Amino acid sequence: MMVVNPPGSSSLTRPTARCSSGGGLLCGVLPMRSTRDPRPAVARAVAKNRPEVGGNAASMPNPLGSLYCKVEKKARETRTKKQLHKPQDEPTYQESIHLQLSMVDVLQKIGISRHFASEIKSILDFTYRYWLQRDEIMLDAETCAMAFRILRMNGYSVSADGLSHISTDLSDTRSLLELYKASQVSTSDDELILDIIGSWSGYLLRQQLKSNDAQRTLLLREVEHVLDSPFYTMLDRLEHKRNIEQFDVIEHPIQQLTWQTNQDLLALGVMDFSTSQSIYQQEYQYLDSWVKESKLNRLPFARQKLAYFYLSAASTMFPPELSDARILWAKNGALTTVVNDFFDVGGSKEELQNLIALVEMWQKQEETEYYSEQVKIVFCAIYSSVNELGSKASAVQGRDVTGHLVEIVSLIIHSLMFVEGYFVVTKTDDTLSCLVQWQELLRNMMTEVEWRTTGYVPTLDEYIDNAVVTFALGPIVLPALYFVGPKITESMVTDPEYSELFRLMSTCGRLLNDVQTYEREYKEGKLNSVSLLVLHSDGSVTIPEARRKLQKPIDTCRRDLLRLVLKEDDAVPRPCKELFWNICKTCYFFYYQGDAFSCQEEKAGAVDAVIHDPLQLPMNLLSDLDYSTWRERIKIKH
Image (cartoon, rainbow, N blue to C red; front, side, top):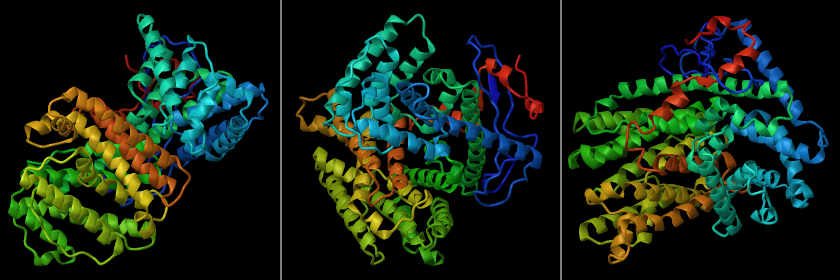
C-alpha cells in the first residue's frame, strides 16, 4: 500500500488555501504488497496556488515545482476532456453511450466532475435526447439504469416508467447493482416501480453475497457497500476517498479507455483530494485554535462536537473555494451545541436570562454585565463569530447581512428559553421576514411551554410541527447560504419553496434522531415521536413497531426533499438547495444505524479519513509512476 500524504501544515492564525510546493508537497509513498493484477494508474498529487481563504498568507510555492504540477494537471485534464468529446459512434453506437456514462459516473465517484462540467453536460444532453426517444439502447438494463440515475441526479426530468420495460440476466451482478442504485434515487412515494426494482434486485444481490461468502471479489465488496450504505447515508468526500483507493472496483466499466486515460483519471482524483485535504487540515487547525481561544473547551457542561461538524462541512462542501462556508458551518454547529447544553444542563435561570439580555443589547453590550464567567464565554464566542462572519458575508453579498445572522442567533436562544419554560418578551426589528419568523417561533414555543406546564400529550402531527423549529438546524444551514455563490435576497428566504426545504430537512432529521434516541430521552422524561406513537396507541403499538412506523414519514420527507432539490431552479438556486440536502445526508450519516452523534468515538475514523489520514493506494501502482520530480518524498514501509 502506498500512502499519498497531504502537505504539512504550519502554525497559523487563520486558514489559507495556499500550499507550498517545496519539501512538504502532497506526496509521500508507503508501498505494501498487493495481489491485484497490475493496472495503469498514478498516484501523484500537487499543491495548486489558489487565493487565500483569509488571514495571514502562507509561504510562497516553489515556482518550478508549482509550474510543473500545473502543466501536468492541465495536460491530464485536456486528455480526459478529449475522451469525453469522442465521436458518439466510436467504438460502436451502444458501447459509446455506455462508455461515456461510465466516465461521467467515475468522475463523480472520485470527486472531480466539477472540473468537466461542460463536457458532462454535453454527454448528458445527448443521452437525454435518446432517453426521450425511447431509443433501443435503453433496452440494455445496465445502461438504462445508469442513465436514469445519472440524469435524474443531475436535474433532468426522467420518469421511472422508463425502467419498467427492461429485463436482465438475474445472475448479472453489474446490471443488478445498477438497477438497485437507480431504485434509491426515488423522489416520490408514488414511484412504485422503483420500490419493486429495489426490492428484487436487492434480494438477488444479497443472495449472491451469501452464495459467494467464501470468495469476496472486488465487485461483491462494492455490492456489499452499496447494500449496507445507501447513497443518502454517506458523505461525499468519504465516498470519493474510498473510490480513489479502490479505483479498480469502479474501473471495470471503462476498460475500453486507453492506458493513459485510466492513469489520468486516478491521478486527477488523487491530486484533487490530496490538495483539498491539505486545506481541510489548515481549516481544522484554525477551528481548534478558535475553540481554545474562545475558552469553549473550559465549559464543563458542553459537548465538544467541533470535529463532527467540520467533518460534515468538509465532506459535503468539499471544493477548496468554499472555505468560508465550511468554517461558518462548523462554528455555528459547535456553538449551537454549546448553547443547547447551556440551556439543558449548564445554566441557571438567571444565567439564561442574562444571555438573552446580552443578545438583545447586541450593539450596546457594554451596558449589560455578565452574570457569570460561563455567560461571558458563551456570549463572547457568539458575538465575535457572528460579527466576523457577518462582515465576510456582507462583502460576498454586497449588502449588510450581519443583522440577519444576529436574528438567527436570537431566534435559537429564545427557542431554547421557551423549551425550558421561560417566556421572554422581546423587541425585534420591524421587517416582514423577522416578524413572520418571530410569530411562528412564538406560536410554536409557547405551545411547548403549555404542554410542559399542563402535562398535555401532543399528537404526533403537533409534535412534528413544533420539532421543525426546535431541532435547531437553522443556525447551521441558513447563514451558510451566503457563502455558496448565489446572491441571497429577502424574497428568497420568505418564499414558500425555501420554507418547504427547511421543513422537510428538519422533519427528516428530527425523526431520524428520535428513532435512535428514544430510550435516553424516555429515561430523561422527554417525549418524542416514538414514545408518542406508543402512548396514543393505548399499548397496542410496541417500541419496535413505533420505530418501524416512523420509517415511512422519514422516507417520504427524504424523497420529497430530493425532488425539490433536483427541480429546475425556481426561487431558491440549486447550490443553495443542495445545502439542505447535505444537512439531510448528514443526519442520516449520524443516525442511520444508531446515535453516532452522541458518541465521541463512533465516527472518529471518518474524521481521520477526510481530514488527517493520507490516501492509501496499492503497491502495484508504483511501476507506472514517474518519480523524477518528487523522489525525495517517497518513504518505504517495511
